[in-house]
Amino acid sequence: MGASDKHAAILLVVSKIPAGRVASYGQVAELAGLPGRARMVGQILANLPARSKLPWFRVVNARGAISFAPDSESFARQRQALEAEGVEFSARCTIAARFRWTP
DNA sequence: TCCCCGGCTTGAG
DNA sequence: CCTCAAGCCGGGG
Image (tube, rainbow, N blue to C red; front, top):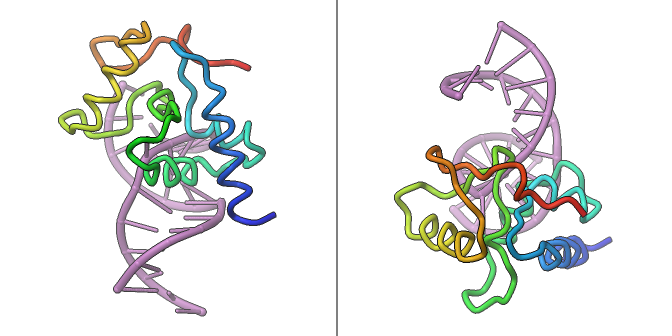
């Protein structure tokens, strides 16, 4: 299997995360048939073109938090996109388990 | 080829 | 709950 296949598999999984739900990098990797490759998911999402229609913002870390620096622009955009779909954050900026996606 | 660095995870303390 | 170490793997120097 070539690298582009893994790439495509990951993008496919991300595209299936329903609005109002979130999945972790590790979860996406596993569903894509690539257990243990969470960082690969991060690398791919980091390289997405700006106008990509993929719901990259529905991917968070295992703690249920956004993986960008809290004071960054990216953090703000991701949080806003999620809240616009009804996802709620706690005071600690973590997302409750009920918002996690389970296929 | 080695080394370092990532939108990470998990298991031990 | 926090910090550390180890694992993971592709990209770039």
